[in-house]
Image (cartoon, rainbow, N blue to C red; front, side, top):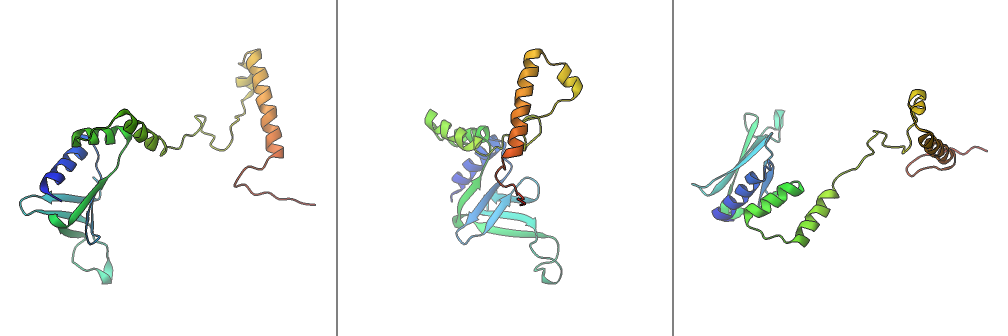
Length: 174
């Protein structure tokens, strides 16, 4: 890796507001920067990356005194820097880095990003799709809403009696 590549990558990370990234050397050393528990910073004057993190060992097997481990990778041995983020962060990152993304690329990024979200029902009931109403809630409904609620309630109770959903145990007695 060159200094210019490293500077451009880290400038794009900063512009996108991304806090975590990782330097990886050709011998498998990983230096993490996560914004909270580990620091990885290039030192351009000596052409190296220095990583600071909690030591991997404790007690009798501790390699060094103290709790902070220091690793250093020579710039020519750094072969990749990795990061990740949301759609907006990665779009900003790519723009800052100078990548020209067309509309098809942006659609792919959006598809990748939306695939990482679990969409849950707003009612907070993550198992059932029907929610019972209290008497006062039911009385506040219009006649049309009551009829719709009654139909949904009947369908739900029928399904509850007759259908065993995936990943649910059943007991059959004879």
